[in-house]
Length: 284
Ligand SMILES: [Fe+2]
Ligand SMILES: [Fe+2]
Image (tube, rainbow, N blue to C red; front, side, top):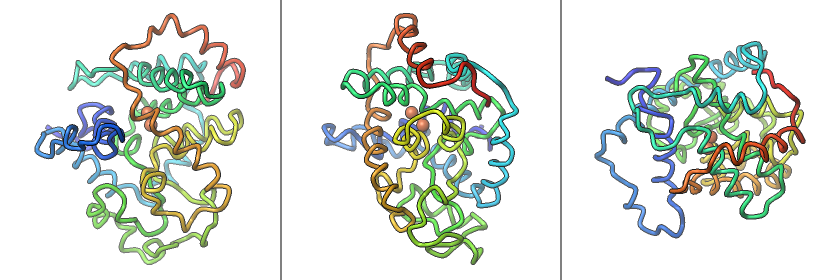
């Protein structure tokens, strides 16, 4: 039975679906991944129905007030990764990879390409905001493509038809091209739908270099970094920084390797990297 909080059997189902929408360029046959009749596909559709229905401007402001107090927990960074790994999906006991594996595969692929250490660290951190699930948040307020709230929903967002259920789409304050924003006001002035991207950005914003912060904050903003649907809200600085967001994306989507990284071998390197950039503990 599909639950409102958790229609997906696991958070990975959303990411598998991303792969079907944005297959690796070398894998020319999109059909390889696509299976529109699968029951899994139906859970993704249901997931987006909920996400597009409930992610309103007011909902986002309320979640920002609730979570940006950071009064939930205080942990060392490696501890956040381990905490995230307690996210088990009872409905799907054999999810292929746990969360820590996804983080390490992403960061190791970045490291193998010789990128700067803060880029590697960003790969390791990028999904830690998913701890929101462990605070009881519904899947549709943790993962999924993100999009600006407070202005018109682009039809370039996946399953745009479900925005018809969103009260903002009938509210004239929010349903025009610019809504509550000014042309090219810069994304820093734009509220994004609530989820793991924005939450992690807010946790990290005092510690990581600017390109890293953009990668964390906008990695699920597919309607911009892949579809360029919100260029009218971006300023010059955003355009510069989105080069990094686009550089990061393939590592997130295409770094699943058949040979899982050995956590114990990698831990010392990552502990050192964490210590270089981040404080001993972080408040969630
Ligand atoms: Fe993510
Ligand atoms: Fe990811």
